[in-house]
Image: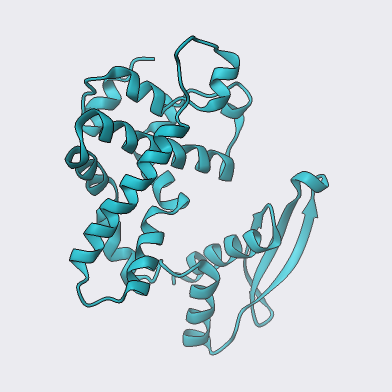
Length: 228
């Protein structure tokens, strides 16, 4: 695969071209395409995760000198969680360059989010090895730092259920409730659908691989439905 257009997109041309290829290579791809010396991206992901955490920590520490350790930790978690970094990866068009097995390439939803988030961290690791901390810092800043003000203003550092409860109590003086709507699939791959309610009104529904995940998805959709 030619990664030249992607390198132009991120403003970094790799001196060691094998690094960018490794960053996009999922373990499953090598199961179907065995090439001597070729590596999947998990080691790069491990490195990139550490670099990402340090860069974001340094940025938040300087940006919010009055905030406590607890607040800064919550802000950082919101900036570097799977949703946030998979969204950044999607905006960069990383989906088009992922090297996956035929089975993995069909995955959508949460499974693809995780693959994208891991590849994003691997890419950070690749940039770090190729050009050093400064280059990795610039890449992370360009992709994530602009989200910070929204994270703080909209309290996105709270989980969706907490935000929905806080807003429902503030706006409507009601504590929201959740009701299981359905469940399907085999025991090892069950899908739950849960409704989020304010009083008797069903505001939204969400699905997940557990009831807790479905409740979070329902709360997220309910916040959007209410414009909160």
